[in-house]
Length: 106
Image 1 (tube, rainbow, N blue to C red):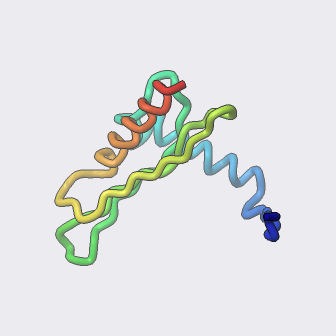
Image 2 (tube, rainbow, N blue to C red):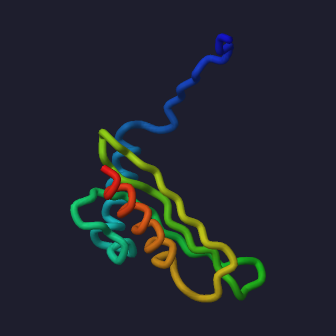
């Protein structure tokens, strides 16, 4: 069989905008809410988020980002729904465990 689809590549933003976003996400790990789930020796970039759910009682806790390694880049998203209390750091600690396992495999 021969593939009949063609890959389509579109630029969603300028390289400058992408670099700016990446730098902000790195700063989250180095100076912000991501400090608690940083992994020594691993350059990471993440965005954290906590959102109140419609019931007004539970939250969705989120981190998304990944490992910045040209040879083995990884994207990671952890989303915890219907949580009573906590913060995005709870999702970040799960992401940290994933990063530790990925790094251990290298």
